[in-house]
Amino acid sequence: MKNTDDPELIKFTSVNSSAVAGKTQNKLSFSQKTYLKLITFISTFGGLLYGYDTGVVNGALPFMSREDQLNLTPFTQGLVTSSLLLGAAFGAVFGGRLSDKRGRRKTILRVAFLFLIATLGCTVAPNTEVMVISRIVLGLAVGATSVTVPAFLAEMAPAERRGKLVTQNELMIVTGQLLAYVFNATLANAFGEMAHVWRYMLVIATIPAVLLWLGMLIVPESPRWLASKGRLGEALQVLKRIREQERAKAELAEIENTIKEEGKIKKATFNDLKLPHVRRLMLIGIGIAMVQQLTGVNSIMYYGTEILKDSGFSTEAALIGNIANGVISVAATFAGIALLDKVGRRHMLFTGMVGTTTSLLLIAILTIVLKDSPMLPFIILALTVLFLAFQQGAVSPVTWLMQSEIFPLHLRGLAMGITVFCLFMMNFLVGLLFPVLFDAFGLSVTFFLFVGLGILSLIFIKKFVPETKGRSLEEIEQSFRVSEKRYMEKGRQ
Image (spheres, rainbow, N blue to C red):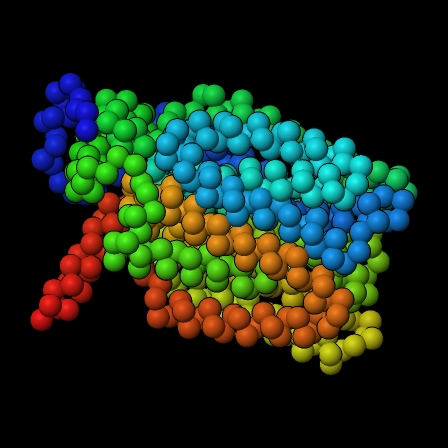
């Protein structure tokens, strides 16, 4: 581990950084607050691209499925939709490893270029095969972004503002989905008779991809990543731009101490997963990731148009109805961000799961009870809006935030890569199988299945998910190390 020649840092290596942080947390200058907001805004364009690229297929699918276009069946619809998620699963693993090796900033820069190339591939795709391949490549970018951006923001943010800043990425995801729904509805209603209208829906994503690449050129590297590579002087300079001066030096001392306690591990490997406290964290992280997908959220985000059409809306009306889903997703995410650092993560996750499971149960029951009723389409739309209020206001923000919080620094990229891989693989299965199940069994039976999975998720949250609110990343790691030691000592007795 390299050291720094900065005498001010040496002076503060023995300071209790948590105490200093608590005394200075509200003394950021206007320029420091502005710079931190700029870093957050630019980096979360990755989340905007994630949201747009997953949401746009909702409206583009009916048009690209036409016989004179890609002529998709229920299975190939699922394949086109879910192929992005298959790529995202592997992108999460490779993106996590790349961000640990090359840095968070450089990884996001490379991913922005990949977003641009893959989006152009989807736009000009002449057949299903090219579309699927392009969507897989696009998914690699989505997965890498999903791991790297939350980790980058968590490492930039002060402990007391981490929940708010990290979940800005979730806000940008749902904003991207809302923009996709708006552009889908606008283009479909204005140019619905145009043979290739779906291509115009897709190509719009090139704009935020270019903006992300240009923006990341002026954003600094994560101070925690710099410190992990022995570049303490650079890390301190970054911290001084986004923290009160004394707190910056104390926080770097805390980071350095944590790195030293992790031993002389220079590169995270799968062997690190053998440590009991790391295995426990991995199981919790994977469980939280699975819970987010087992709500069935992406059956609505990807196939909302088909669900609303099945309930009685026309294609054009269904596309307009999806805008309501996008609006409530954005509004709910704002509410979730406001609550995260006031209400515990665990409590929000549990409450969100209760809400989503209840909403799906009502949809499943009322679809049977009110079959052929003229009110059914509006009731289904209202319930999907309620579902998304709980999902985007509680379940999704907590999922992404806790993924960025619970893992040790030297393993953060690798561990998040694995857990987000599991998230996207479950997402892939939902995206692939939902249209097949929907076509074979109908909406009610399919949603009853998600209700059952929701109940199992509630049991998992109650028994295993910890609380991380108001604790620094280093404190969270130390708490798991202490619990591991106590467990081992109890075992010896």
